[in-house]
Length: 616
Image (tube, rainbow, N blue to C red):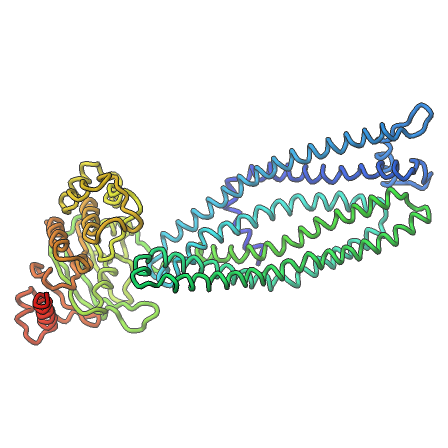
């Protein structure tokens, strides 16, 4: 399972395989040279404790004899045949200095190459996840916290890549160290080596007992990181609401609650993870004591030199380091696997709404037809749109009105294919809209909603968002038609003024007019206005309504309105209730139906407006 999970990450490393190979070669060389320089211990110990190179006589055979010869290379004899200790130590110092210099050069080259690979993989993986998110349907986002998704793009990507790069370095370099030290130990004494390997195997088995617990904890920790981001994102994006209700302390408490959970989770996983290393170390110490006892007996019996015993003990200590690193690697891989599973959950997700292959024509000559359309959201069994039949004619302005929850917004969401009908079909240009590809279908629509989103960019770029190829003059003309040009020129930097996050630096009416200019510049044949003026004051509403009228010439339009006074000039008005169209006609026709829903809604609004004026 773990192997298959990380194997799926290999395509993201493919563009950097050359650098990975170079990094691996340097890593192998670094670990090999770093291990070989430990051989300098043999002549150092022999000189310090006064052992001659013939102390074992003819008993030194095979690999041990080779090590003895290597040790003798560093021994300098004077004219009398005695060992020149100063000269010998100078040779040893040059050897150690040279090997460490090479080791660090190789280590730097390997680390730099791997850093390039890690940053490149991080970019590729993050790009792939973001691209996948852009293809998923709206219901995917509505079922998840935005902070959780942001955590996937940041924390999880970083966790996977750091785990993968460190694991590659460990898997390639540490076995080299292990092999070099193990070879030396086998050459010196097979029995002591077998005892050492038994301790190493016991250490690895101990690690396996912890990995399931660590994986479960890591999953929980990744989720908690997402919760922290969710709370922070909600507070930052809704800071005006938070401050207007005086809820700063409440939000701080919420944030501290989540960070406390994350703190406790981090403590728990650290407690389990860090317990592995001390247990391994205690096993190593017990093994060291056993080897020292057994090896001392071998020296006293004349079966090995004191230099060989000391080298063996040092090699055993050094051998346990790659064993610990490899055992810790298993733990890190399971921690990283939690983040990898989160990322692949996104990469494996399928959009509930899938594109067709046909291109939609921009020339609307036939009615848009809703044919017995029904739809309900995943978490609700009751239909939001219920067996609805409707035709919208070319160049017609159709208004949708009705109480909240009647299905008005859902209806236009289905038209733009944010969702697909549960049953029935929607026809455009004589074809089911599910036959069309997304790009050409959605290019037919210009949408202006009540909650207008502007990006943290210049006003010029916000207007040009739907048409990046538009000239500056085209943008100016669109702004003029949207009654936005004059107020833009009055701003400090004109069209280069930053709108702020979500357009926070602009008023509601200004944001709406920018949105209308954006829709106008896109030049769509079909317009959708979803409560575009419901949150505006009277003056702003008049300016926006005038801008909307400029947009409606020779276009098909669907207007969702709460204020019935704004849609009296519509060609037809469809009154919706409980997902169905219950009345249809012009303003005057519907108003003449004294017992109709439209007449009741209009009467209530008229009375409320009169009472408001009287109060003022």
